[in-house]
Amino acid sequence: MLVLALSLLIGIAGHAAWSVPPTAVNGSPVIKYTNPAPTVTTAAVSNITDTTATCGGNVASEGGSAVTARGVCWSTSANPTTADNLTSDGTGAGSFTSSITGLTAGTTYHVRAYATNSGGTSYGTDELFTTTPPTLTIVVVGNVGSDGVDSVGGTPIPGTIDCPAIRCGADFNRNDAVTLNVTVDAASSFQGWGGDCATFGTALFGVIVMDGDKTCICAFGTALFGKGDIDGDGDRDVLDVRLCLQVARGIIPGTSDQRVAADVDDDGDVDETDARILAEFVIR
Ligand SMILES: [Ca+2]
Ligand SMILES: [Ca+2]
Image (cartoon, rainbow, N blue to C red):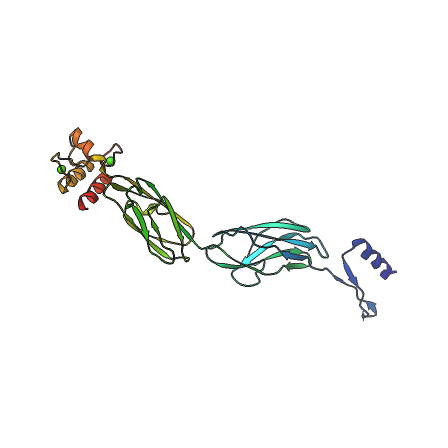
């Protein structure tokens, strides 16, 4: 009767597996229940960027009990498990999509789908993918390129940055240190860096470490706006630079004409940026 009842259970449950082995303990039959783990496959990896990718999987069978967790797990080592990085993408049977984030540029990863029921965790095949290399993009704005001299150059490892155009870029190895330097034509002034190079300020060069995609903005302006002859003697020289700095620092107030002449970047005030632009002009 017991065996008959168990057979009926099998018929109802459909996927539970019971067995009655031909052994006995203390004269009673031993009934063993096994709960098959789910069956899951790993989907193809797509939409790979420097820090993200899309994967997923398909739970073809929940096994002996309901699938309570599924997703993908990944690592830089083969056969990642749920003890590594993982996503959680619902429950039950069927296909699912997983968004992988927090990756490192230019790095090869292993990923595989997982599905968990009360009987254990199953994995799909181990798939390999490599994130895109870190890209440095230079965006030049302002008074650029009219004379073909204003440009941004950089360390050529392995890409070459040479950017007289409005926008240029190159791929690098992860953690390459790229030295960027600005060339300014006599007709222009350098206004400074922005984006991921903002910490360079108004320096004519700086070093950026390529630990991910970077975008640096490099702004040029028109040199001097016809200004800079602060003492009105018909030229722009170190005496004008000194006057500009004195006005900028409030050491002397300057006449209204001098203040107009000292605002060499024409932004409405006299500060040390004006003095620097004028100094760069005079040095050239
Ligand atoms: Ca002068
Ligand atoms: Ca100014």
